[in-house]
Length: 122
Figure 1 (cartoon, one colour):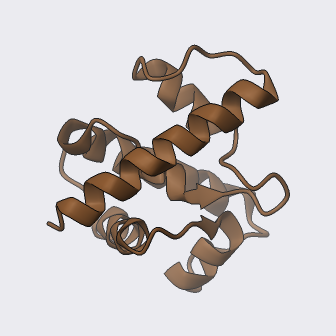
Figure 2 (cartoon, helix red, strand yellow):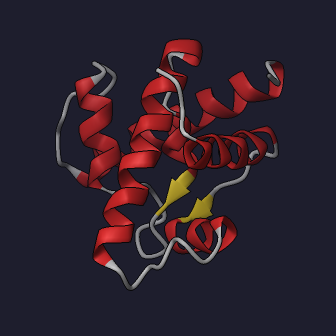
């Protein structure tokens, strides 16, 4: 899957964050991406979520982990439901909506992404 210019920009930011063992909120990610990512525009946010998912799918082929794990909800401190749906689709998560299961999976996936990108800067 070839990434669009916007998706490549998202991927570059996510790789930098993973290499730094850092996370970023959805809102801060939109700010970092610039004016075209208006958090108050539902259509723009849907585009952002789709691009984030495309990046995760493309990267999964390389790392077998979901790079989008570094983007988290400010309120919850871990990714939104779309992340867990994607993880389930990729066979990485059992699909349980139990908060404890989600947090445990998030922490393990985050560690995996950090480890991969600290050892494999592309």
